[in-house]
Length: 252
Image (tube, rainbow, N blue to C red; front, side):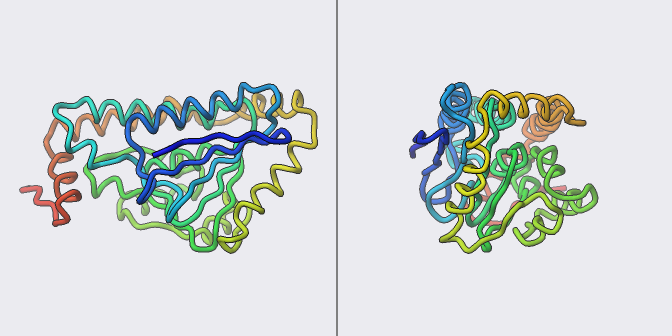
């Protein structure tokens, strides 16, 4: 697994590469947060592109790591790591463009929902399968991508939406063939980096300041229910079933 950053001409590109599906470990989430924060604090940077290598943008947390770790350390670490990474996107001192390929699931929704601009490949899908894993979270961020009642349907059913649907809502700016995704993101970034970095940074701070929802507090509220579900035992059974590739038996 690697998280890398390259900087050129005022643009930082942060790339996730965690085969096979970009499900990040606890360490991976914290590393992503650190690199996004560092990119935003670099005075030479006016914009960040967040993208991924491989089959999909992000598949959330590494459930196999969680189930192979004794106690609650991995669960707590994943919750704190996701919070840190989502917060790093939102509070990055410059605009963040998410370039989404393939699937964007779970924690991926937290990253994308907190981004300033989203471009997507025409095969991209967006979803929160959390209820299937006995967890909750990132509905805060999904609500920034789709209307309220559509968000509720997606949470309850765990079914995804297409990039084309999100483009219809205006949350995805461009839908392009997969081989044109990076070019599309760089095209938008170029229209940002040509402006004063001082003004762009002020614009980012001002837009966050008028946001009607405190996304950090809202997400932490959601995470509290995940802890409750874990204490009830429901979450362990759901994650075991996922790892063992079987249907969960909730005995209820």
